[in-house]
Length: 566
Image 1 (cartoon, rainbow, N blue to C red):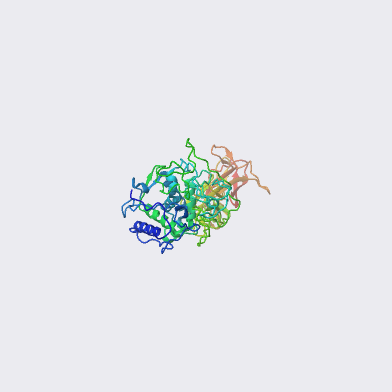
Image 2 (image 1 turned 90 degrees about the vertical axis):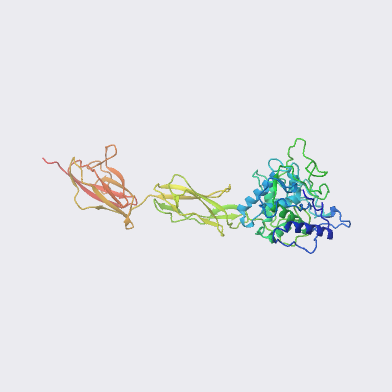
């Protein structure tokens, strides 16, 4: 491994020269980048207390080791992970997985931010040496808490206790906590559950990496832009030295890195100073420390989970005066607001969903995605699904479709096409891949209708008792057009003021050959139907056949039964 630049940057010309040399060496082959803030001279970390002898205890509480000049991959090579490389380029497996998962998660909920996992890796290196070189359990939680010094105003920011010691064990002053060094009040606002275990734990690398990523993306930043990277890093800790150090590691990791087993990562050289996050004892490459070591059994120390405040501050403390705990005065840049995250999907004004069998629904289902800030949220994937006992589908005969919300936070489903099966069913809209409640849209398919029906043909319908009538034909229409596939009920009726089914006279037969006097038929594609095999029966006389359509149209046809010849 190539030699490192210094163990700790000190204020003054010497520090500036070393940092400038390292940054120049690391960025020489990468093209133009963002100019460093206050590039004409070092700006001491806000809240630090200058020391006459330039002692390390007078500088900000983060690790300032710079990467080696030898890059982990040759210039111009792919940034895909090589199998091996220098010790400094290795990132412990769980830590690397957490950074990549945070990038993937934010890529879905805030794609415009373009968060690179290498930036999280750079900050994680500077803040905690990649979680003590990867000393985490199978769930990504550090074996013992990583704690910064007490923020008591003596060399650091003065931040009195905000969590009753729940996160940092200090009920007098706050301390930065975890692999990404969040102060408790900042964690209350920005904490995340990155490993889906139902907890927001600053000592869990998955939770902390996702929280750091969301913080860096705040304020509509685009981290593919160098200037926004600078703003994001300075919002984390407002110090030119901090920016230079993070930028150096960011450039280094962008040129290639590789995965190493958990617990074997290289620790910063300046451990055990008393001014930096306490990395504990027994870590690979670490020096002595007064912090408690993990229990002999190896059982992870549980991290308390306080209840979040009922009303979090709308303007959270910056991690710069937070995850590093190094400032005593407000940063000159505006504090970012929380990153919008998906909170719900809602009905965006869809009306009643009703259609006749075989027709398209006039209404189209519309959904709106809302953020945790109560505003419309774009680029949210929504899944629409037809459920229930129905043959209705979306256009293209699809039962399920996935679409993405637009800039106004809304998305409209394709046209619904009713099938032949009548009755009720439901369409559900869900935020794809989430457990958020679905929006349900009741829908109904009604039977095809006809508003008119008439007999076709004019010949009298006469038959001798015991014989059959000629075929009876009719045509149904709806709004003047042929009413295809409409149900028509044929009934032999009495000649009363209020007719009922006649139990005498002509009849039909069912599939078993039994006499029936009511039969249901369906019109063909031209709206026509034919009744065959109507049997003449009973005493000679005139009988009535009534045809009634779905929709209420009727026509009455006379049937004459003649007595047999002598």
